Amino acid sequence: MDAFFASVELLHYPELRGQPVVVGGRRADQPQIQPDGSRRFARLRDYAGRGVVTTSTYEARTLGVFSAMGLMKAAQLAPDAILLPANFDAYRDFSRRFKAAVASIAPRLEDRGIDEIYIDLTDLPEDSLALARRIKAAVLAATGLTCSIGITPNKLLAKIASDLDKPDGITLLGLDDIPARIWPLPARRINGIGPKAGDKLARLGIATIGELAAAPRELLCRHFGQRSGDWLHRAAHGIDERPLAVEREIKSVSRESTFERDLHPRQDRAELSEIFTALCRQVAADLQQKGVAGRTIGIKLRFADFQVVTRDLTLPAATADAAAIRRVAGECLKRVPLEQRIRLLGVRVGSLQSLATTVSSGDDRQAELPLFA
Image (cartoon, rainbow, N blue to C red):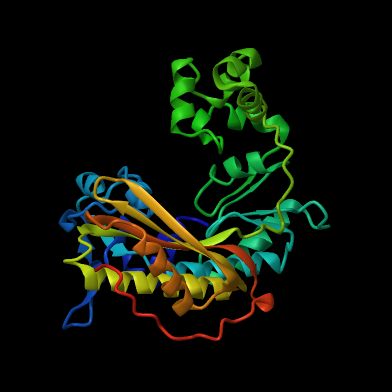
């Protein structure tokens, strides 16, 4: 999907089309309705905090603002950009819509997250280009949003190709096209080459995929190990034999919240307890939406000094009940010394099984534990 979160926001605020828009603000950054009925939007220059950019429109990207960038840094690059808070409930709704639209045409697909899928067109009788156009039309009709599609022999190349003609593009790429279309690209464009591997390749004088393809396999194996070096060599030549994972097993469901300011376990107890309860309810709703329940319930804390602590408990029977999750997560919390301010709080449920096979505990009471005492 093209700039997915930002594009969903533009459906809600069409007057912002063509402007640099950044998603990632706080609830306080919601647009304000003016007496004349117009909306006043927050500007990036007015932001103060340590939040990060969730996504940005293409107009903001031309100013250097990209996902995962700190909002304060983004404000230096694009102070007049519009700032909106993220609305993940809306994004999940549009995600379900676009995937259902694709599945109605090409049912063999691999879910790669909220805004991306792999689609197997092999056994469909229609021409691939015609199929891509039909898929794009179906997605647009279902969501009002555009997407970009890369049609290639394998997943590795499809991932790269889907970005070549954004937004609203279709790219057909055969193995013969690799030297002209793929090799000039930066090596980091290969999914799986992260910042550290990219820096290491740069120290070896390898900046592009073509230079990586030309590097001796022995050199890569010597610096990256046999397995990784062999993968780098194959990937640079467009070789990828991974099948589509049509059915992906969900291992866990989690929610977490990073605070705008560090919260104190005692002084901010009421606010922390409210956030904690909301996270448990959100996890329960996610479990029920996915049709699963879990036996292992855990918490995650990141303190002001960036130390991360996790705790979990395993129940005799799986649950997807918000009250039960909160009760057990509260027991986990009691096992953590709460002696400094907290930056992040998270709740996780694992050891999942089908909700249809889950036996209810029969206790739906909301436990009010003295969590941040």
